Length: 151
Image (tube, rainbow, N blue to C red; front, top):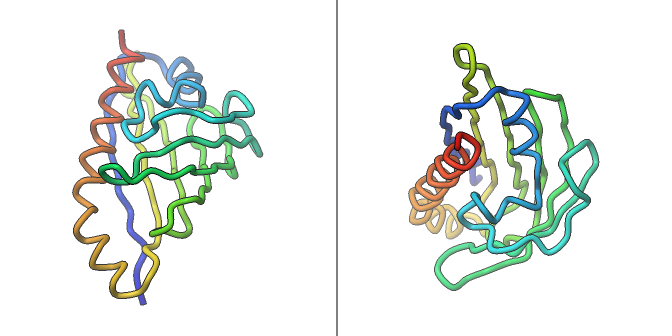
């Protein structure tokens, strides 16, 4: 049985949680900081319980897919979960966004991407090959977010 993969990236943003919460929920701006989001095709607007969006996502190299996301957990200003589909090699895609205060005016933002590789042992091998790339991309994305919001 192929196990779930979890990739975690975090950064401290030099901004209060209320400001970070608004920015991280602004789904229309994801292409500005999420490295693999090429463009937002459709969004219901800022993230809230039940809201949805579709984006064109770079999977690896020239491989792209339309991914669809729905917010299934929404607990302002600390936690939200987006469930997704559209990547042929993954099922049970889940993005967890968590905020915690740091000092008087900072916020730690953690992004956890969870998914289960498809295609049994072959999918597990492919996942081993691309997991580091996913982790690097995730960290670059959260670092870009920290720079964007902390300006």
